[in-house]
Amino acid sequence: MTAEQYFEDGNRLFRDDLYWAALLRYRQAADEGLDSAILHYNSGVAHYRAMQHIRARASLQKALQDPGLRIATQYTLGLNAYAAGETEEALRWFRLVRDQDANRKLRSFAVVAISRIRATEQKPDEFEIRVAERKKKRAFADLEFRARVGFGSDDNVFRTPNQNYIDFSEPTAPLVTPVPQTGTFLPLSLSVKYMINSLPFEGFYGAYRLAGRYYQDKELENGNEYLHEASFGSEYSRKEGSRKREANSAFKIAHHDEIYYDPDDGVDRTINGVAIDDRMNYIRYGPELSLRQAHERLSVGARFKGQLWNYEETGVVPEYDHEYFVVNFFGQYKFTQTSLFRLTAKYYSRRFGDRPAFDLDGQQRVGNPNIRYDYLAITLRARQRITSSMWFGWDVERTARTDQYVGYNDYTRDSFRFEFHWTPGDRIDLEASGIYRLYDYPNALAFHNPVAGRKTQESADARLIGTFRMTRSLSLVAEASYRETVSNDIRIQYERYQYMLGVRWQR
Image (cartoon, rainbow, N blue to C red; front, side, top):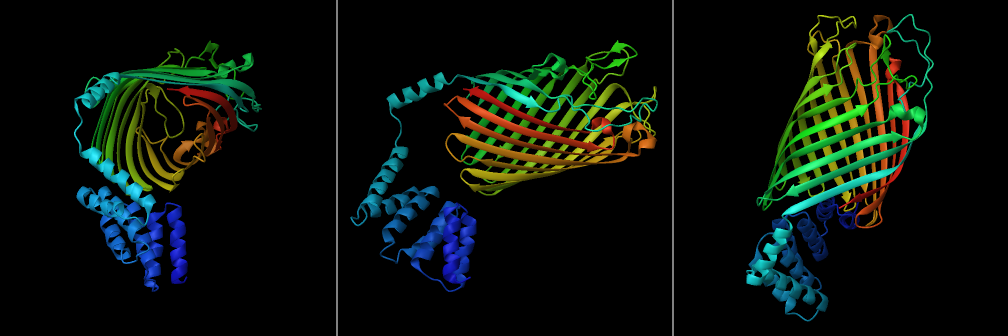
């Protein structure tokens, strides 16, 4: 392109808030021979928006030679100096703009800027101190409340396989002919959190959360499920300049309830005439701790969790009781104000107390050690803001699971996730996300039967959410989701669409 074309393209990128890309075009225009005051001025403003204050000052100093740009340049030099923490220099530039008569609009802006700088330098009087203390007392305790209720449609309530199959785990059984069932449900979520800010940077809280799904048709009641969770803990947050430190700790206890049904028809499961429909109900509890240290560009953090999961006893089949541990470390770097990159390493383990491990032929023999699965995951995350109201991001994750007995249930899982957020107006938010997971099982068998061959599995999820804020606290939320799992173990293969419309209230 010509120098003028580079310059015009730089202006276009600047209008889209892509300051680094605009600076590249301005430099290319200069390399092609363009040397004008407007180029130096635009480069200076772009450097200022990108927080490169030394380079901004150098470019703007060159633009001062143009009489037509002198006043605007002086005002921008004042903004740049104040952003760089050089108050006296900022006042000097603002006074030059204040004392001229050629541009009355910028003169009024300069007067406001000078008064605001002087106001920040003044110490509060006794009355202002009393007002601040009174406000602080009012904020001694905070109450957060969120509730969402709506109406939903589900085209596969019981995650039923979408094709006929032979159950190779029971070779003598007849051909299975599952039929997916469709129904409507009531999605419900509720959360309450009460915080006591007893210390300057730390508060203590108690919280409760409810999440559930309730189907309207009596024959679909086995699809109902809900979760109650109570927690209490502390939150510490302190910010000094561009540095921020956070530490959160909590103890949580939750109760989960669902029916253990047969996906083929949604009927309660039984073993030798004994009902085991409560097998998947559990209570879990344990402590959590998270730490985060953030600077202007670099952030690091860690998370620790330990839980006990206590499932219902059935007496005729092994229980799912297990210990769950998580250790998570991350590092995040902001390249610019609009882009960041994060690397996360995560280790977690599930150690069962009453489930025999699998042999390589797919059999769970009495006397085998209990199951222990260890997981190691590495995640790369990137986020890019396109405009002030739009951003997108992607995640790539590799997870390796190790079956600590003979490796029967080892797998490697590759996950690819995409997110897009757009706020086209003050009242509207739009979100779209999708994730694809591919599993590689080196040893596991479909149906746990060598005849069926090595197990394969992949899945895909997609979600669209639209939010319309009717008032400060009340919003209308529409959501559509899709889930598909494909496997040669047909028992776990299904496709599902869900649509929901509801209202959300929060304060």
